[in-house]
Image (cartoon, rainbow, N blue to C red; front, side):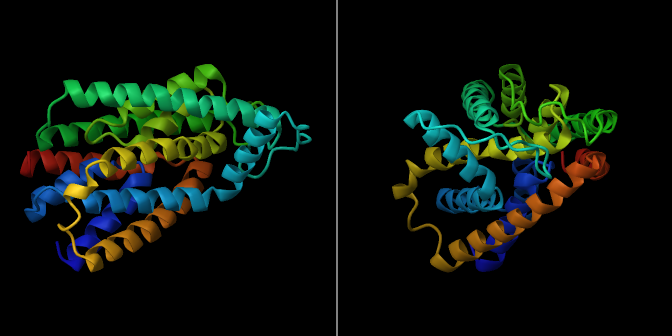
Amino acid sequence: MNVLQSVLLGALQGVAEFLPISSSGHLAIAQKLFGLEEVPLLFDVILHLATLLAVVIFFRKRIGQLFGVLFRWIGRKPEKAELAADAMGICSSDKAGRKTIIAVIISTIITGVLGVVSSKLIPELPVLFVFIGFIVTSALLIVSAVLAKKKSADDSQNRCEGVTVLQSVVIGIFQGVGTLPGISRSGSTIAGGLFSGLNREACGEYSFIVSIPAILGAFLLELKDLDQMAGVVGILPLIAGFVTAFVTGYAALAILMKIIKKGRLEWFAAYLIPVAILGIIFLA
């Protein structure tokens, strides 16, 4: 793998990992279009690490608050006074924080179980299923956009209550579905949050907070075989891919959070549907 290929794949990973357009689906298309062999494991690990870092830095304030809640909870320290909802529509109270931590654990367990089951039961699918996945993602985004518009941006529901157990179950299931080829993880989790009643700002943030253990899990699974792949990719392509994935991933997060706030998720469906149709005609 050369530096140019690593930059292209890093940009693809960074953008598609967070925008609701399916990173796995676009990677499969890139491999077919450019005749690339399977991405080396070491390079895939580096890309996951870059996107994980982008999420952590982007949501560092919220993550810091949740860790503060966790430490006070474990140490039985006095709770932090409840604060009003911030610009993203989520409170900083310990009560809401504890519910969010429990919700992340529940969503992650459900996603992990569904991901393992799908990887065991579903064989490697032809590229046609990627384009079908794009259409499924588009349908989810269109329905989500309708729901988001019906739910006013200043709706106080869930702002100071945290994510409920039922909502965490629904989001976990949707995120598990997002492990299938061509179906966007971020699009699925955002849709699941809106379907379960979260306001769109809180839904967007929770979707990416809950992505941290999912990305970390994928990173750790690949890491166990890393010693077998250490010599496959040179240091310059690794660095180029990491930096590109981090920068584009961070930018994609910033853009998507603004789009979610505006309730314009259907914009991505307008991109995915033509791509799916053209792909079925020319590539499937």
